[in-house]
Length: 299
Image (cartoon, rainbow, N blue to C red; front, side):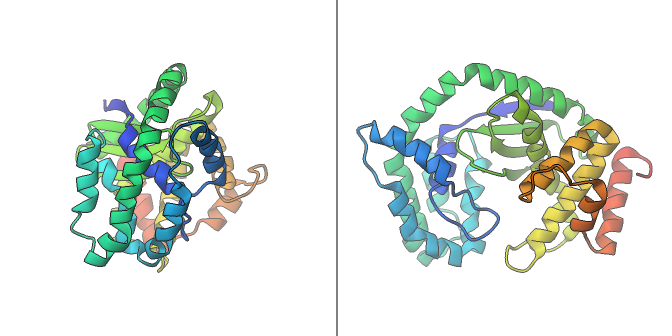
């Protein structure tokens, strides 16, 4: 049975906190006016006056224009989530995939923003972490119970661990990172008991990318349709896996997907779901074989 691990990091959360202040023109966007309003109340009551929104506005155009290279900043912190702040800054500044222009016009200013914002964010994070003790333990218990019911998937892919990074600053969606011996994903810490199942769906979604992206056998980009295709594949295969393991949970999955698409979730049935999230026949055949390999029979 896979080990279930929950981790937290103020350094990684600082990166997602800063990204929440920058508007991005694709599905990776973490910008949140609500999050900004809430944090600015805290900033006004503190002794630090750094204008983070202004700093991020200055570099967001370059980021958007060069996203296919720069989007990796969403994932580099997850490679070593337990590293200290100095190591994280070096990781960002020395990443070989960035050009000299990238470092001059985005990475350098981005790391500077992280440094300046850390003086206010780190004490804030530590306070939130302490005060959320009971909520953290409740969410961990619920998520562990849900994840253990999917051990068949972990065993099939020979994953020894299912790691969940529970974030105080990711404003929507999640982030996944490839780990050889385990599944790893970062998602927002659920605010209450009702949000545990949606958080599980998001975790499982990010885990699933580790094996479904391989099926695509192509570079996944935001601007050529491959990202949408990869998302459709994950959304579909997760539905069928969840339905195999727990029919009742599959009924909760459909409203969750509907809400992500902007609907209320009340009228999104299976037929509408399958009609919306389509994939090419050859990819569908590979998906069905993958499910058969996991469960040892037809779906």
